[in-house]
Image (cartoon, rainbow, N blue to C red; front, side):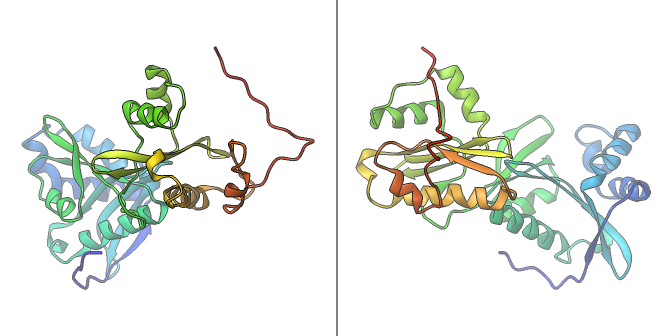
Length: 284
């Protein structure tokens, strides 16, 4: 991670008693930027100060409250909701260290970090330095995203497009799925990973579920790259996500093609007991 200055600070959980401090902090650090973009509205800013207070941490230095950071954990990402530091404590590396911690947390879970930043705000330079990219541009702000890097190569933690998904399915001899249904399915995935070679997706893995049940729904490898370790690479990514996010007692399942049972056993899977066979149907 990026080097930062030696800033000695700690965090504590925020309470409703801290809302007034957070509101005054927003006045000191963000009013000018809001005046130049959305406009400053006291009621709206008080609401923003109190918003997601359960996820807020007060930044302290020498027992003095100097800032706030709010990070909202989601299944598919961490959202850096707010981060403000009093002007007299800026430039000491505190913001850099806080962002670095958030990225380390997201990297361990193999999930991206998202945020919104006002146009013209100095904070955008920090996010640029850490490798955030602009994913959406609006009239007054940007949505930015940081993507963790894989240990295994040209891996991207994202859902495949409908075209990428059906192209790879076709290459392995599977039928083409309905585009509308596929788009909904991709967006509802818990976790997806793709491998890119020369600009094309050559492998993908996808997990669906509700947090209590996880299913490895797709593991598809381009025929030219099969039996070369790519499937194992993607399975490690999928199982890494599950091991980080699943709780004790969680059911993890998959449907294995005949003859591949031994392959999946190396990842801890076993065939269902004959007394509890799996069943399915395909709608025609």
